Length: 106
Image (cartoon, rainbow, N blue to C red; front, side):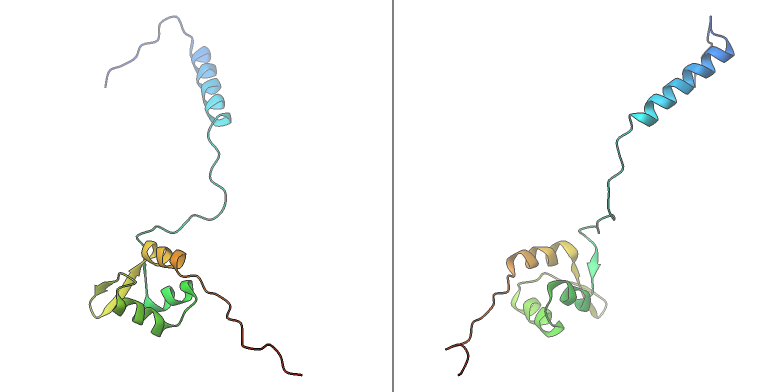
């Protein structure tokens, strides 16, 4: 590292200049993002966590895995799903309200 030798500056002048620079940087720093941090997309979820996130049963998640609708990863004897894959499935999975035949009885 090269040494910097200030010429024509007093110690007090240099200290005040540094303080002014620090003040300027602190007041003009970008604001921190609001709200809780988001989970990383490559976070692995258990089958139960994925079912809860999707609003379906554990058996449904296993069925979707079997049919190839959800990609999964094996670690040992357990299966895990990436949060991004579950979120993508959530976008494609829209529940509809089924209406019964004939309405109410009188």
